[in-house]
Length: 371
Image (cartoon, rainbow, N blue to C red; front, side, top):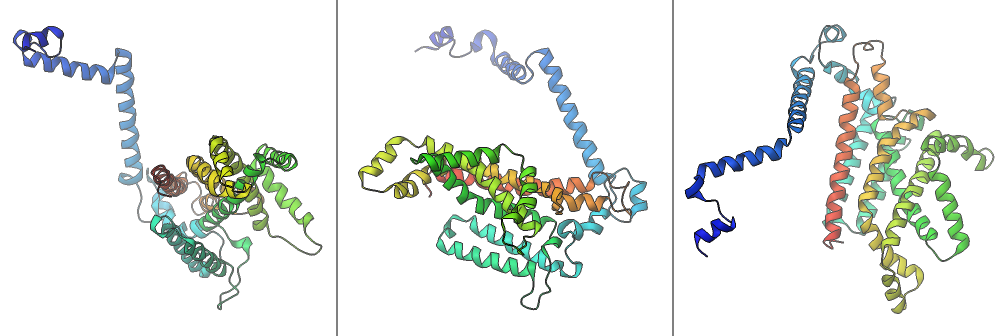
């Protein structure tokens, strides 16, 4: 095809007629038009850029350039920036709360062990049955460290457990124990037995229709009524049971959606091989359903970690509660306004972002048939 034909059909610019530079100018104008659009969109774009620039400059000034890094209350009172000495002075209380001060090394060691075990569990090459044994040993060591009473460690009541370790423990135990409960409820709700299906539906709908705070209050008040005379259950145990029940109901609905998304032909093919119902569900249907709902399960895990802040209504001091308590210290009250909340937000963001990123990694691996 000749150059003249291409020009006539509009496939290439007519350089001889308009020149190469006018063509480039038209390309630049099209790019600018795509960026700003109409004059109204251009004004909105410029305003957004200016607003973002102002937010960035104000934040940098408050966090660093006008912040106080050394001194005390008096230095922070006359400054226009963040008061970092507050976090340095209250760092241990914010992290560990009312746990005995001279025993807080046990909580710090517990955090290190927990994050180490969680990090190892995230490596696919280590996924095996031995990992379950590692977690059993880790949980036993964490319980011994936090409770005490063994290895010469002083006993510490669960009423003194607080701060970040408490939030992590409530969320982790709630999700780990709530997951099998949710899977069994989902199987029961989609199962062939009408009576069991009806009970599962009733339980799930009742729990999901109530706020988690209501369930915590019910567990704190009603759980002792189901225990034998003279037996007692601590507030921490009651709240943990409430979180497990709540997590189980929400996980059940998520898994049920995955079960319904698995084609019916998969069940029929497994039946033709002579597999029984529980073999079909455990080996064929449930694994496929869980692969489909990985994003939703990650969202539930992140949500329950953030919802641990609600335990303050039953008298427990979670991570956010210790931050608020530290900010109400008479030595710092009125000077520190949002510094503690920013630190708490950074911690929540780091953990939630890490869970989300790992969830996306697991989802991609599942799509590629990694497990």
